[in-house]
Amino acid sequence: MRYRTLGRSGCSVSSLALGTMTFGRETDEPGSVEQLDRFIEAGGTLVDTADVYAGTGSESIIGRWLAAKDAAVRDQVVLATKGRFPTAGGPNDLGTSRRHLSTALDASLRRLGVDTIDLYQVHGWDPLTPLEETLRFVDDAVSAGKVRYFGLSNFTGWQVQKAVDVADRRGWTPPVTLQPQYNLLAREIEWEIVPACESEGLGLLPWSPLGGGWLTGKYRRDEQPTGATRLGENPDRGVEAYSRRSAIERTWDVVEAVRAVAKGQGVSMAQVALAWLLSRPVVSSVILGARTTEQLADNIASIDVTLAEDELRLLDEASDPGASDYPYGGPGNDQRSRRIDGGR
Image (cartoon, rainbow, N blue to C red; front, side):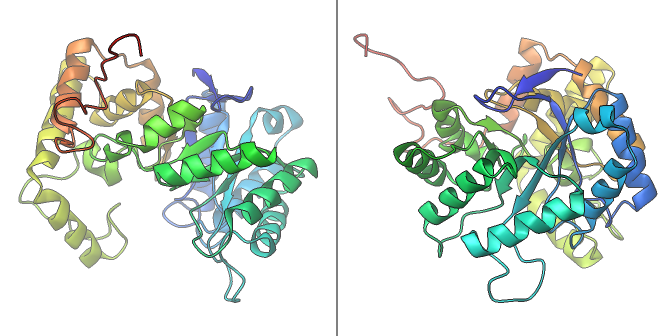
């Protein structure tokens, strides 16, 4: 395993993180425990969950696993969770208000069986709550010793910048990470979100790195999936999602590029897709979301895959989302190849 820091913080984490959205839902508790053990044995440290995963079940599974481990294992784990969405039915059981987040954080601490969350993440923007209220709550939680670091999830570029600026102006705890969807099929965050994070020192924690299974090669042109799939437990939903994605020719260009690189290296397509993400700027850790221990082991092996320049070029060109129009592309406006004229 290799290690990086959470953004500009001094906290080191494994460059691959164990995502636990499947725990208690697609993966039963014994399987979840097996994944946690395998991840730790491989040198993994960052375990990411949320209070709404499996209806709070994911946090509870992790808490029971931690309680059964010795101090050395517990000390190795860098624990991340999130709050924002409802876990019950009350009118204040959602959002990023002080009232909801204080209740949500205390409940997460109880389920996880810990005194402090290493990385507490706001799970999404709340248009109804003043950002100052949210950030002040987080700062108080850090001061109280309940939270060590603070992160964002599913924020846009301007929302990231505003959170950074307000925290800086008020002298409050700044965010150190952003958790966005990011993979070879979803690169639009490179237009504004990645530059904002790079400018302000936030590390990226990409989720859905395999594009819901597309980048593993499991889906074929003109072969609709049947039964429950990673596209959704409802088979009809899976077919609808497949139909939308498969109608985009770029999808198949990316899949074939990943397949070609994987064949050339003698590794799985998943490992190639993960290795590409690990090569991207400001990525702190890539969140793995496996259903089985076998899938997890294959994903972890991506740490040993190095992509050559021509392989990276092939993947980059096939997956280019095509920002050709103003203000992201076109003459003089290409954000990816900025020129500096006259020393400015």
